[in-house]
Length: 207
Image: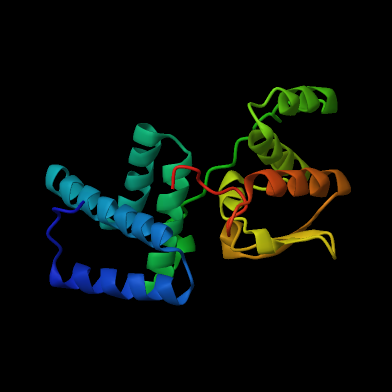
């Protein structure tokens, strides 16, 4: 949508929408996605009205979501577009979203993933290439940290006095504490003695 030429009205709507999303503390990635979804909707409206000038404009939203369902399915993009347009209609152009009778699709109930047994986890850790890899796997398993959170973990975040690990700016940009077990502390101390990281616990050896 980078080459789309916006009318002055559309450009002002985009500016107002971006300001609204920033004020509501949406992430820059989400803002970009929502504005892209709005631009795609506008392009669809322009093409649809050209090919079918008799189409009632009040039915464009329904036609758009039918198009999205047919092309992308009732999944991530549908929900992204739904959230974007609902916010835009309600807060920017002050329309009654309920009047359009657009429903968000029901979420699929995904089957639960297979869970490794403690014995399988022990074998996986034991067969890791070296102490660093073993420590990484054990930390992930013992704390439930995401890989991105683990990569940002600093030495100062591991508190052996209170036996907690401080996770900074995790999912949703929120901080939290996770328990630090005695076995994990022991392997972390062994890892630290051997590798001597400076700031980040699991530093990149290539740097």
